[in-house]
Each structure stands twice: as structure tokens, then as C-alpha cells.
Image 1: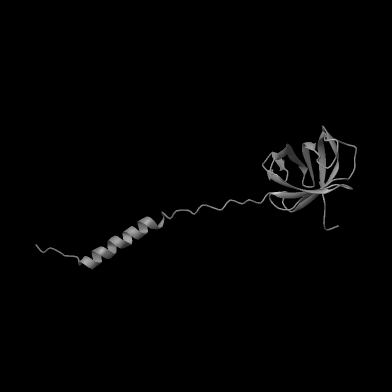
Image 2: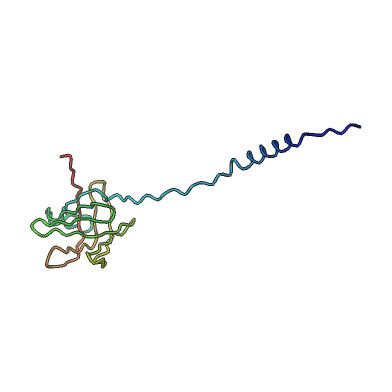
Length: 144
């Protein structure tokens, strides 16, 4: 009986091909870089009034909020000073920090629609009477 001998290079090529096919589907997925952009970044809002339950009371346009970056915003009063603040945004909380990095206010916030949002228990640092009020902000349309 005759024994067939397969050449060594042919066996090596077959094993290498099998290994490549086996590990071709095992490529590790690269972790996706987490997006840091938040929905308020690059937007400007004007205070439309005090928000009580679902009613807007004392309608007026005074303070303007400019969310300049993901972490910094400018608060500008109608006749008052401009003040830069740091902020941190989560799904339900908006935290404001003064220039020393001290937490000044932590507020629950939510959208009413794409042009209106409410900040609960806003403590206005530009006024002498620091009262907690729920405020309604309206997005400023820069195109008009």
C-alpha cells in the first residue's frame, strides 16, 4: 500500500488559511468616543416669566442666558451686570458654579417644547433679593 505524503508547505498554508478564517470574525470593536455635547450648548434663552404649575405669571423679558460651551454660560440682566458661570448638565439637573468653582445652585430643568424650558427653583444672582422661583425660558431665534 502506498502512503501519500503531502508536502509540508501545503499543510502549513492550509493551517494558516484556517487560522485566518477563524480569527477574521473575532476583531475587537473599538470603544466609541463618548459625545460630550449637550442640547443647551450654543443656545441663548430669555426669561419669559415665572412658571407656577402650568401657568406663566408676571410675563417679562429680563435676564438672558447664553450657553456658550458645554460647561460655560453668560447670564446677562436687562440693566444689570453680566456674569459668567460654569454649569453642568444632566438629564434632569442643571448645576451652576460661581467663578471660584463653588456650587451655587442645583436646579431641576425640563423642556416644555423645543423652544421653551423650565428651570425649577432658579436663584437669580443678579438681583439683591435672592428668591427661588420657577422660571420659563424662551429660546432666542437668531434668524429673525
